[in-house]
Image (cartoon, rainbow, N blue to C red):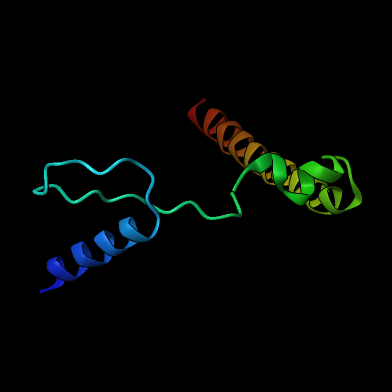
Length: 91
């Protein structure tokens, strides 16, 4: 059923995109992912081409940096108040 269909598709892709010499052993099915022309390289993204301090990158970087600092500050103030309240009630 499903396994045979997947193996057949993989075999057809291997025949369509040969990458390695075929083995004389016919029991194995060579399953390889075909290489696509576009890669997912970080160096080829728009942010890396234009630089990390470009206006597009800063529009994302600065608000996320501010949000994380405000969240950290809020958590610190909350924990500080809880600790201060617990030490005064213990005395």
